[in-house]
Amino acid sequence: MKETPLRPFFGVAVLSLGHMITDVYPSFLPALLPLIIDRLNLSFTRASLLASVLVFCNALTQPIFGYFSDKMGGRFLILLGPVLAGVSLSLIGMTPSYYLLLILLICGGLGVASYHPEAAALATSLVTRQRNLWMSLFMIGGNLGYGLGPFLILGIILHLGLKWSFLASSLGLGMAWILYRYAPIHGRNQVNPVISPLLTHPVASPKSGPFILLLFLVILRVTIALSVVTYLPILQKMRGFSLLTAGSSITLFMVFAGLGGLSGGYLADRFGRRTIIVSSFIFIIPVYVAFLYWQGSLSFLSLALMGFLLFLTEPPCIVMAQEMIPRNARTASGLIMGMSWGVAGFGVLGVGILADLFGVRQALTYILALPAVAIFFSCFLPRN
Image 1 (cartoon, helix red, strand yellow):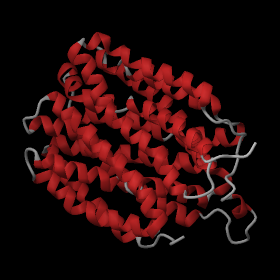
Image 2 (image 1 turned 90 degrees about the vertical axis):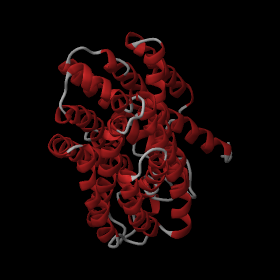
Image 3 (image 1 turned 90 degrees about the horizontal axis):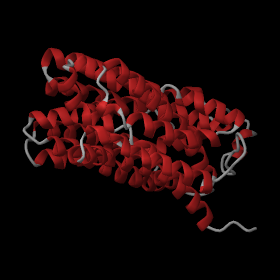
Image 4 (image 1 turned 180 degrees about the vertical axis):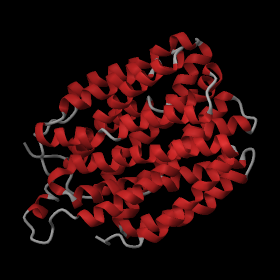
């Protein structure tokens, strides 16, 4: 049967919805972190370790899941993701033990990790044109999901109490059924028609040098974003905002992150990926400074702009990575979407140690060095 434009759109839409629901759950931790710190009497370093464990298990295992998806197919993994993440992370607010909390975060992180490599590779394999834009449509689901997570969990516990937090898992269970019925099915290691000519081109073998550079730049960007998201509710509480307002700051940040990702795909198709990557790092610096020093409602304006700029380059970087390693697109996706966040988790742990020593805002100030370094190195990315 002849392929119609609506069929790939529907497939990407289902995968993006699954991305949104799966990524709802990791944002429960930063939203609940002020409550967890008070209840378990945690230092900033131990609180940072919670965030780092979730990120490590989510991020560092994505290349492994991507490898097995490339070899054996990953349909089971995209069904497992929202179920395991939903059940595990819906319970973290009511857990009385620090070590039981760590176990739940490990399970939840593995659930989130299992979804991403296969779903990202499927999303771009469905289309043959404007792949940056289609990847943007897939990624906006995850960014919006992460942004809506705090509203969901705080809405439940503020109205019903912590013991009802498990109700949030119903979204993940329902999403698994939708994916089972409607997610597109491709064989293992299927390659997009746009990429397949690269497999036999004599000068288009896997490009390890540019890929390592790209991964390094993504790590710098993600370290900034993850540090901001982890400490945002704490910082906003210190500025006098309520728990709900402080938690919803993540929603604002991630909604504009989604808009940035959507815009980045279009702009990359129009002006080139390297141009967008360099420009975003240049503008991040003044916006980040404004966020640190503006108070009251102005902080929300700078926060929105920062989310937009930090995620502007997310879809172009993923597509670029898939084209650099065309035979293993799922593994490449896992490295860019996963390993980068895992390495960034060490940065968050470092920020926690600095926060115990110098305070939260001063610790976040040191992050300003990262976009400056990224501006220099991003100039060495290939144009095409």
